[in-house]
Image 1: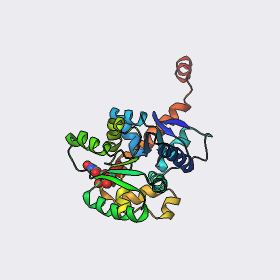
Image 2 (image 1 turned 180 degrees about the horizontal axis):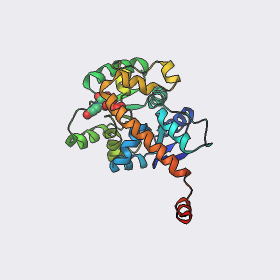
Image 3 (image 1 turned 45 degrees about the vertical axis):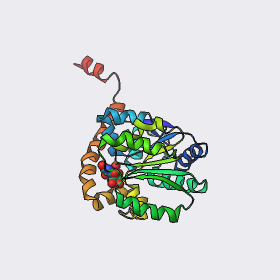
Image 4 (image 1 turned 90 degrees about the vertical axis):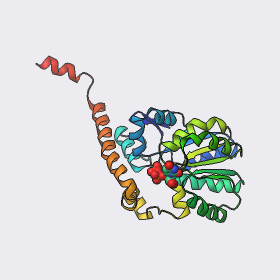
Length: 259
Ligand code: UDP
């Protein structure tokens, strides 16, 4: 169900529904651009028109962050109370299993050479029937984007994982998706780092109490400044939108007639 949070679109779906939608596209070789949205991305999109267009142009936008679900419930009281987050990394793992069963071709763009090397070993073990047709690290100048996109597209991958960090990865997908008429394309952020063993995901108990973001703040100091800077802004924007909703339309009129 497509809704909006601070003007940005969001599909309030369960993990099961999201996985079904993406797998159906994979099965039928249909193009699908997937975005996994978190509060930082919403704040960034409110200030970045290119990113906003990428989000608006996506086929599926799942609520990756706990904060997104919190904001949705606050702004839409009584609507979809059971809504839950859909972590992008789990959605990808879910789809990778199907890609493995179907022997699909995948391409990976982003992260470091070292991470990609480790990843190719762990993928071969975990998804032996997936055909990795291309792996390109994400440390190139933007002037190489066109060539990289053509190089990846020439392999006709079924599934393209882009890990350049946000919003670059979503903007890249939105710029080049026409070269990939039969591919699932998804921005996976730091998932490659986790799958390769470079970084760790929060333990299950922290995820259960919705504190995965706090684990990132503690374990990835380079990200923490960014998270701690945008989170208060996000909360402020959500409350502002909430109170604007509550304000009766004729409140100004009432005030002026009282005087
Ligand atoms: N990355 C990249 N090129 C860049 C910047 C980042 O390939 O110029 C990769 C980085 O190595 C990591 C991934 O993008 O694997 C996600 O980066 P980050 O954690 O900063 O992004 P976020 O998940 O916070 O959006």
